[in-house]
Image (cartoon, rainbow, N blue to C red; front, side, top):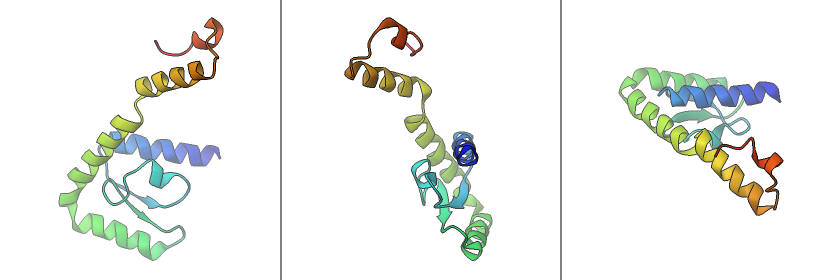
Length: 108
C-alpha cells in the first residue's frame, strides 16, 4: 500500500509541476488526475495502449502545455494543504471533538 501511496504522490507532484501524465486506471489514479485533460490513462497491463498513449503524447507535443496547466490547476484546487486542513478542522468540530488537545495541531 505504501508503494501505491507514493505513486499517487508522485503523480500529484508531477501535475503540480505542470507535467502531462501517462498512466493506468490503477487504484485512485483517475481521482488524482483529470483523465483525458491532464492525463492519458490506459487499462492496466495493456502495454499496447500504454505505448500508444506515449506515442500520441510524443507526436502531439503542442498539447503538453495545456495538459500540464490543467493538472496544475487541478492540484491547486483539490490538494491545497491549507484548504484540506480547514476542511479537516470543520469535520472534527462537526463530530464534537473540539477540545484543545485535539485541535491544537490543526492549522488555524
